[in-house]
Amino acid sequence: MLEIRSASKSFGPLRAVDGVSLTVNAGEIVALLGPSGCGKSTLLMLIAGLETPDSGEVLWAGQSLNDVPTHRRNFGLMFQDYALFPHKNVAGNVSFGLRMQGVPPLEIDRPVREALERVGLSGLEGRDVNTLSGGEQQRVALARALALRPRLLMLDEPLGALDRALRTQLLDDLRALLRQPALHQATLYVTHDQEEAFALADRVAVMRAGRIEQVGAPAEVYARPASRFVAEFLGLTNILPAKLEHRGPATVAVTEIGEFGLNSHPPADITRPIHLLIRPEGAVLTSNLQLQTSNFIEGRLVETSFRGSHNIVRVRVREYGLTFEFPAAQPLPGPGETLSLQISSDALHLIE
Image (cartoon, rainbow, N blue to C red; front, side, top):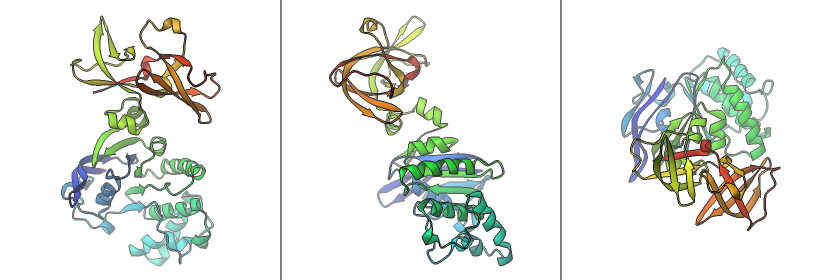
């Protein structure tokens, strides 16, 4: 449905979007994920028609939109600050886009009621938006976008202004809403929060410095980050320089802290520079006696950080600081004591 072909946009010397290509299919939710300033919102502006690409194209169903003005693209856009009109009630805000499109007054009431019903605000048409909670205001802004029955719904950090508890609740509500079979809404969701992207999206596109570094299903991006940047942005910091060696039918990653047998297929050229990623959930406590074999490491426990359902444990292995996750009920030694860990081959990934 939506296709972006090699789109670029510069503001003076800053290349905010640099040769980006991406698709969003019918009924699909795609998250643009990346740090502040990586070009996510600029790309959204190009798609919406609020900015014009310096090069490349934005297409819908194979037809170029580069010369189509914003109001004729039939895309819904919701910003982080919601941009509600304080002098209008709920119905007035939701109906605003319909009125701007010239929908006859007698035909406005029904789509407004349907949009409010979809976001769980039925019966609040007459409420002053200034009396609504942050979560209710967010839903009004979403209803305003949905009332237009947009071909594409674009959400720019829609939960960023909310506290954590409300953000978690509304994320669940938003996921249920967008996945309604009757809605079948193509959605582009911009966020810097990986939990939001992973919980909501069918595919995630990770951006860095105006470019897309990786696109894939959330589980795929987490399990097999395509670059060191993607891994570290997702919080996967256990990255070690490694050399690959063939040991019979098996391939072993040799690092300064030990050798690790791999389940994944090695690259064709094992002499190329490579890094080994150890995902934090991949370690279990074990005995010193097993340290002579591969996939075992020994280090000093630096600190333990309680995170509710699990503990974050930081371990010093030679000059490397590694981070692992253990269940909160797991007995652990104290700071300064030695930890012996067995690493699952399933938790290992090679980054070229």
